[in-house]
Length: 150
Image 1 (cartoon, rainbow, N blue to C red):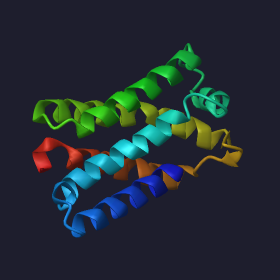
Image 2 (image 1 turned 135 degrees about the horizontal axis):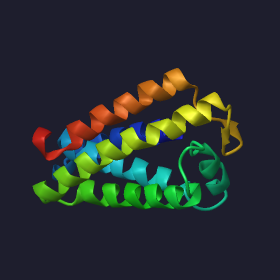
Image 3 (image 1 turned 45 degrees about the vertical axis):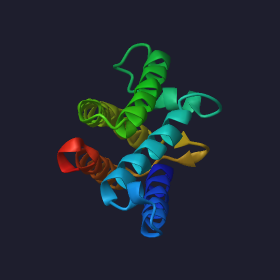
């Protein structure tokens, strides 16, 4: 749920800055790209530090090397965040496609965490129906953040 809050606040703040006359932020598309990048950096930060053990427990048992997968997905989130804000259309497109596929690949961990009633940051993970809706929203927003909607 933190990811959705961060995304929403970042987007609103960036749009407000754009409305004050800051030209690069005077359109929804770059604001969405930057807001998604901020969200991804926040979510990636959970892959290391005090929440790492909880993230590792979220990996479904049929995947081997869960600690390595958590590190890898964190790195991919950081790379995707950077790719979203690099102005070259080709790189933005690669980042959008990669993030779309990453979100699909991460969903089994969210399903597993919800079904096992796991916690993240000491709080229960987002219930599966809400998490599914959030995941669909993120997929749509990643598509909208791609260069094909600029």
